[in-house]
Length: 344
Image (cartoon, rainbow, N blue to C red; front, side, top):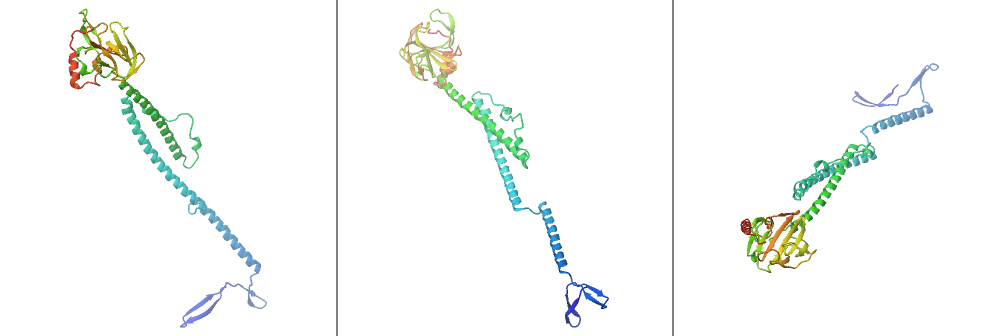
């Protein structure tokens, strides 16, 4: 039972009581009175120990439950979570950088196919070849089984494909560089100037085509152009090349020079008075290689000039873009098309 002892009063109405500890009594039939039950000291200690054990068990159970929920994380788990978020952020930034690199490389590939390779007459590299993946066995098996395996595998695939595209593009640019060197060499080698300068030219005596032979008067094909100039007028190499012949052993040509320009081009300079080059000598466009004469089958001092391409004789008139103005070329074209008599 609970015992309350009054400890004060106010106006006889309100009283304040102090709650005393719970006390148990028993009825003693011998004394016909209630006697207080005194708790045993051992049982009191047991009750305290039982309370503490129960509190420990409930606390441990509660802690286990909290640790297995998202409500409470250990410092290590919090650190790992922060590291994971940071890694995910880094991966996102990395994916954006890859996307930018893919865009830049795609632009280079487009220019490579549609400008560089087109200009140098090289076949474009097909899209399928540039963007082909990697077949065969699973290359990414060692990346499986992680929380972010899908992201890691995707980034790895894109990086490998990007690397392959860069290798292909690098090889293409190497090829373009070689083609550029060849193009530069080709442009320097093509016989692109007139072999006798206009200031030394008396007239363009005969052009390429059907002409009257000066000796037989028979109409026959004239495979070159005849430039009339005074004896001793300088004759120029019309393109870079190597001297094939410099002799007088060709029928009708007299003293003559043949230059191999490469790329299938050969030029012939005939009826010279003399030459100042020798077989095997390298020459540059514009170099003086000989002088106008009238040796061989010739009716007067002039230069007979021929251009060969892949063993066929072609009209030299198509190659004077390097030394004549539009007006000069127009005048030369008009003179060359006249069906007159050749000089050889």
